[in-house]
Amino acid sequence: MGFAAIVVAAGSGSRAGGDKQWRAVGGRPMVRWSVESLLTAGADPVVIVVAPDGHSRADDALAGLAGWRAVTGGATRAESVRAGLAALECADDTPVLIHDAARPFLSSAVIARLRQALNDADGALPALPVADSLRRGEEGLVVGGVERDGLWRAQTPQAFRLKTIRDAYAAWTDAEAPTDEAAVVERAGGRVRLVEGDDRLMKLTYPEDFAMAEALLPKTIRIGQGFDVHRWGPGTSVWLCGVEIPHDQTLIGHSDADAGLHALTDAILGAIADGDIGDHFPPSDPQWKGASSDRFLVYAAERVAARGGRIVNVDVTLICEQPKVKPHRQAMRERLAELLKLPLDAVSVKATTTEALGFTGRGEGLAAQAAVSVELP
Ligand code: MG
Image (cartoon, rainbow, N blue to C red; front, top):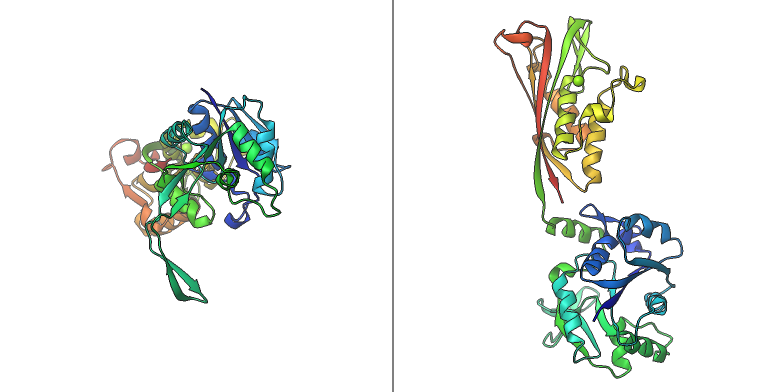
């Protein structure tokens, strides 16, 4: 039999410093992870419960997914769950999984265990045994222990048949809100089964939880390389890797002709297979005439960030006989590190000549090549 799901994303999430359910984890809005897992497992429908101003954010966060709809929740989690239950038009015995958007890493295995458990219980929740010892504290001092045998950490989703959870909520008349749906069903006399939870199903509340979640996600390392050439012409200085160097010639180009930055920008775009510098900043566009190439580099780095990725390191080689690069290498590294927000030891600038051979050796032009590594979710 099929199943329905309710994802509660109506909280303000102020503890995480903002509306955390819309915040990106691994390059995707947090709520999208759960909704994708539920849809993939066959949930139909998935009802997202949002705050009154959350509908357009849900549309953005879940763009391209089919099979979900949003309803407006209430001031408390319990009111939001009630709103989600009211929106379901399913048969009474339909299994319903009720989930917190703040737990993004929902596996198909947990979903399967919950659905299986409903065969002989009124409800089911994923839980993990308490591994740490427990102490009761007052004003920073231990005032006693708590026996941890038989204690479990409850997670979500929690699973029930639709009529069971609707009836249980209807019977809940306390002024105080329930801690979770299992508490509501237990109060109504239901048997709620513990099924094996998942450490990755942790609740993301505080900023450090998000950092932990990012660290848990599998990453892919991507490599990019770039190459650029500009020819020498009359001038008094040249821009290389974001640093202006006095010189008796300059490099000719539509922008500031900083071949080092152009090669590096192409390398970054290459690592994320996002075209090249000319695609994003066409030389035919007059707004880039004389432009500082800093902005091209920062733009490429932002494209990586928008994918939830980060640049790991960059390595630029400038190929020319003149000017001498070595006296300016440190300034170039510092400028690139600043533009890319990287530590200095992740930024390399090197230089070589071509032994007076070829166009660089004859002083007709300067070439630059760059390599980068990028970590993507
Ligand atoms: Mg160029």
